[in-house]
Image (cartoon, rainbow over the protein chains, first blue to last red):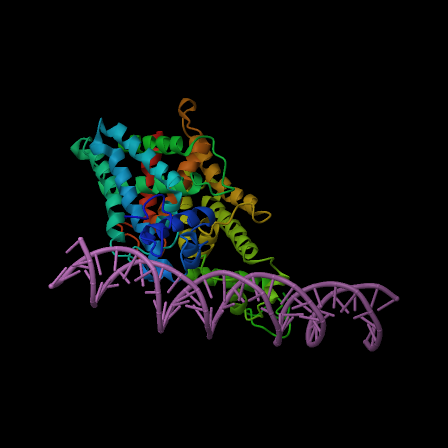
Amino acid sequence: MGWSDHRGERRGYHHGNLREALIRAALDLIGQKGPAGFTFADAARAAGVSSAAPYRHYRDRDALLGDVAKRGFELFAERLERAWSEGGPDPMAAFESLGRAYLAFARDEASYYSAMFEAGVSLDAEPGLREAADRAFASLRRAAESVVAQLPAGRRPPALMMSLHIWAMAHGIASLFARADAGRRPLPMTPEELLEAGLLVYLRGLGV
Amino acid sequence: MGWSDHRGERRGYHHGNLREALIRAALDLIGQKGPAGFTFADAARAAGVSSAAPYRHYRDRDALLGDVAKRGFELFAERLERAWSEGGPDPMAAFESLGRAYLAFARDEASYYSAMFEAGVSLDAEPGLREAADRAFASLRRAAESVVAQLPAGRRPPALMMSLHIWAMAHGIASLFARADAGRRPLPMTPEELLEAGLLVYLRGLGV
DNA sequence: TGTACATCAGTGAACGCGCGTTCACTGATGTAC
DNA sequence: TGTACATCAGTGAACGCGCGTTCACTGATGTAC
């Protein structure tokens, strides 16, 4: 922070916020050309800095990408938790809200989503990455547990399995239909409606 | 074909089967380093040929990748159709077989699956690509129609929507859990069991 | 409050490397007669 | 069946380019006294 904090402009010899600027540059470039479509040098250029400067902050391009993925999962977890909002006003409404938040994130933060799920970043690549990913998944799991708890004791499916199904369907819809992936398939409904309908059918199948 | 057809060995000045050799090289390299992890020059090297040779067959790396994706969809469609085997012996069994075939393809032909869904290849990149992808999807849709037809006329969900749900769940499970993606999440069950359970719940929700 | 000094976060020049691409060429194949 | 010739599918040398990476350096910041 400090003197270079206004709209990210350079102010002198030191950038002052290069780490953040590199993250933003990486997100921009992912948005333009996909997760494989940029280099360390590109990121430096986009941040308005010499090609040697990024080495003060990241070991290499993969470390930068790993940090982007980590921040993505942190943001994702926050968004999902907020949407779930502790199950209120009632579990079904919270559940729908969670699903919409999932797709909204995949669309609005498409570059983050790409770095998290499509860039081939290993969860062990960056300290804290796996924890951040776990935290995001925990939101889904908590929601599943809450729904399961509504069922009579004899007919409760395993909440873990249920949350994996929900995650798979949401991720499947997001990556097949909800990305601006130039040339994907036209749908008879929006991805949000598709996911909502899918989750309703699934929950009915569980007896909810 | 002809004189260089035995196990792909070079036999003289002409390769004789370079196109196929480049495809195989691309698949190998995707398997080793991911869809972004190889270059046109790498493919030439792996095929045992000078770096100028591939230009006789492909405009550039993207054209090669596009061809790989197209062949992948063709193979995928065949496998799905064979698994469905015209709905026999009964629709539910055929349905399960289809699901297993989906995951088996994603695992056994991981390089093809990558080129098809993770390499960012546009469906318009290569003539015939979209048609091949449509044919694969048509298998899923036909299966959905067959299951829908078993329901009483008043309670038939749209088969297109149903097939999109099934595709999304299968793709979600394949890409989140069934890839050897180094560092993914441990599961309480196999991806096949997870998909089978998910489809059963979903179908029960439809009233099947 | 001022000064000296350590540390931090940049610069810019340099390098080796491999990629993409073109080119004139050449060996092998196919075909017309 | 043999020969001449067109075409095809390779070679290998060359090039310009941008990337990754290192290095000695330097300007700015923070802090001890």
